[in-house]
Image (cartoon, one colour):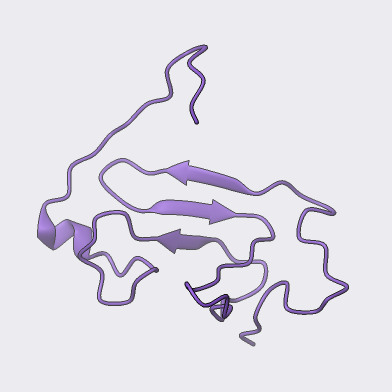
Amino acid sequence: MMTPRGTDPGDDPGADEPVVIKVRDNGPYKVTGPVVIVDADGNPFRVEEGRPVALCRCGASRTKPFCDRSHREAGFDACERAADGAERS
């Protein structure tokens, strides 16, 4: 069943597990853990609770902000790595 995560005022998305965002080579951001994804107006997107979410980073998805694998057709190429000791803002 698809339910919006974190829409109950009593929900605490960070209570039990950390949110992890993995940058996938030539692909989307893979988000695991309890997260709420909202649009520019603050409306939550409906995502299946407990399942990872793939967010588009190539810009070609027809289902933004979610990945629909359009990066494959678009030839998206990005393999960033975290630099040791480098702080990001």
